[in-house]
Image (cartoon, rainbow, N blue to C red; front, side):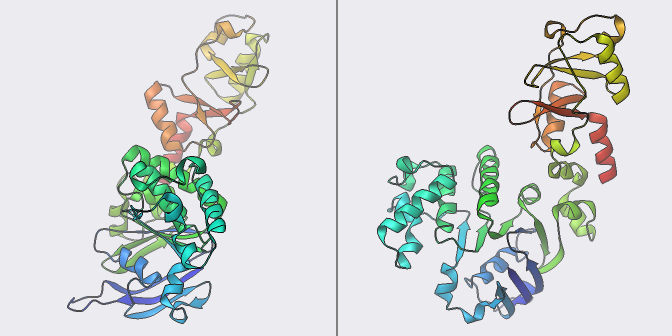
Length: 368
């Protein structure tokens, strides 16, 4: 969808180019994060795509078409743009802010309003409550969502995002990142995203392009960059905890095992003991008729004497994780609970398997 060829930018008076002949291909529907230290050329590269900065040399193609063939205003209207400062017009309502480009393109008011309402629903803001509000009436996170909605107004195939979540506090930043990824599964835009935060890049990106001094040091998937950095600069930039960062790329559902190793009230402890021995587990979950966990029995309990199992005799669960949780949060939950295992549940709360600390440790060792 986006192709950069020998793209270069040299500002008058500077000794070296800010961007020096980079080549980059971004596939349709991908999120590509441009990552690197301050002054490395990532924001300049982003702005050259929609010609907010004119390249000194090189070519940019969008969906196979040379952007030099576009009228610059037409080009910018075909590309959604989200910046860190959000840039909502304070004297306009939310509806008017979202409708800026549709109005410039000649949409009638009813069509623009319907599109604004549709987009507010996509970004999880109730249209009846927010269409008539002004930016001053919104929190920073809500303003950021409106900024994303405005960028999506004319359904552009490409979106450019310049540190869009950088000005938001860490808690809301994580929530908005999650919300944005949910939106992306629905709209499937091709997104170029500037960041300086490796954790954000690992979470958000399908592809990461790491810059240094105007050059591309490595372009690859987050997993490959963490596992196989090209050089010492990339390895240093991603950090010494790269094996732990890779845990963010694995979900609990990918690692949960022995989903059929459960017992129900009325079964004998000998059955529980045999199941734990067969699966190599030190605990077994007891579930109700809907398959939801009610507690667990330890190997020591089952070994001690024969008895009929009941929920009243079960030990309380140390916690639970959802199948979609990443392993980094799973490990955090294990440390918080002091347990070496946790049950995994689906969205309906049904038991789906065991997350075992030793298996995660082995994954980290394999990653390293």
